[in-house]
Length: 397
Image 1: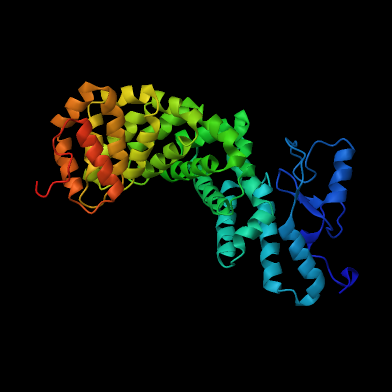
Image 2: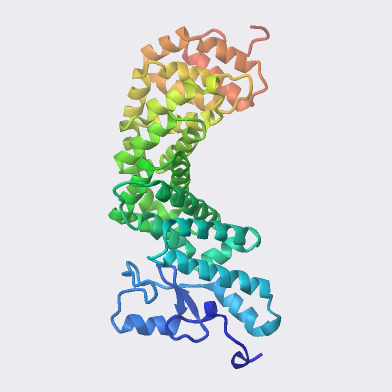
């Protein structure tokens, strides 16, 4: 059907030319334009986004293939194009304008986010719609675009809902927009939310840190977070808080430590001690991320400063021994044994402390368990290192 015979949905129209978009491209602000129109805008010397008037930190254009596909479908099918489909996108586009408005109250914007969630949960393509319409960079801008002096109850509620929406969009594995946090002012806002936010906000920000640490697109940002001593200290403090918050902290710390350049700073800010405390108290509180904490400690033990921190921690060796054998499961056992071998190889003090703390009994129990053959081999190696005559698998304790 010819375009002239149909009313063009406004979200298929270029905001500059007001004509049907032929070649949709998206700017770093999340706004989509027809390529020819935005190229003319930029060629005229304009350095802002025509819709938001934000200064463009990056003038690159990304093809919006999702929108192109929708427009192609609409042109082919015409009036028979799923009206519910169009209605959903139209409603989301209207709700986006409310979020962009400087006049809408926080309470109204919170209600808008609830409406957005309700609309997108009804559609299998809900998250794709949000991404296509530029909600991701918009939400990030609303969250981190300005530094507040205090976090009001209304601001906290909005941040919780906006972060929930951001986390849903992260499931699409599109992390490039997160690089906005490389700007000092936006990273300062991130830190402010982490310091002043509710437990839910802190957990959500930890998940964002995990996402940043997992992508090559955001590797530079990951390193920047690793240089933020205040943030690292906050994550370590989070480990000592209630279940849920501590779990999120463990995951974020582990994720950041995947980048080698972040590890020294993590140790210097008390990462080893925080993880050891978590493990030492794990059984009492039935925490289930002790194996991840153990694996992170093993990773950090490649640093001399980490070895020193572990040996000097009053419960350091005891925490490792606690992970050698657990009745419920053997996750973390091999990592604990390898960590003990790293520590005990160069330290007579560590070997004596480990023996005094009952490591031999734990190793013998492990050898009689259903753990993997590889773990048993590591256990025998540690027994030999400790000078035990029980370096053969025993028939009886």
